[in-house]
Image (cartoon, rainbow, N blue to C red; front, side, top):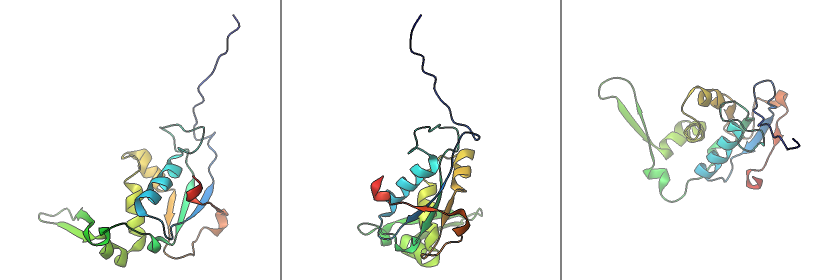
Length: 150
């Protein structure tokens, strides 16, 4: 019988090629920026994407303090956390969180777009967020990319 046979190629840790990418957050809208970075971290932009494998790239985000929010979200968007004690619910607005730790605003939005399991925690470790244009990953020789091209 002369028929075509296609095998589904499933990536694994040995066959995945990971690289370091540098992304500038200056002037980007937070949600749109975070969804594109999460897609890169997950590996959905690659042809050999496999849902249960970490096949994404390592991403370095610089200028995290220069991200923007549309409308009145700087004052109305709240981040809620709990201390673990009774009555320990605490909330912060986006502007308060930006003043305290600008990188956390970007990290929190990207983490919310990753899977909520062990794979998501592993993918989140591939993200490095820095305030300002300097970063500590020069040894990895990151390749700068423009998210508007994706």
